[in-house]
Image (cartoon, rainbow, N blue to C red; front, side, top):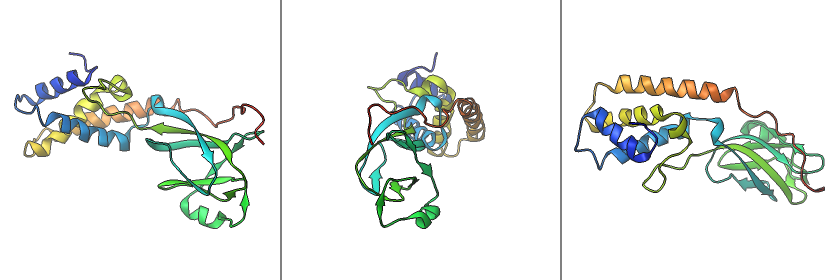
Length: 202
């Protein structure tokens, strides 16, 4: 059976565990695997662009942002903002207003200046995949790395099944799928954001 849908995945998990009494627990194993995916996976298919309004020193991250790749102000010419550590931002912090040049990420996006005007910005980032469900049969990770879903869920089942000794094998297969997928994606991550803005934003 192809691991190409949520229902097929649940069936495969039950088959590998050789149990017919886990119908209620298998969705939880999948949720735990997805929690692991959010920490581990950075596929090129997860890369998303969104427009932001920069009008304060701190602004909210886009919904589902797992990891920023780049941020730029859509000025003319484009202003590519430089990412810095939280400690470095403390040294760069300016009380005066101006055009931001640097940013750091914590629970939000913080700039080195209070913006001297409202800027339109574009952020490139890895976006969290929509969880599998009865109404969302697949996503990029299931499409590209179905074995990570399968073995991630099987590994998550071990504590529920009272220390299933196969957890070592399940985790090894999961790690192999993760490393191969991220290695392929790493070679295809976009370079710096250099495209020209639309219009003549100052």
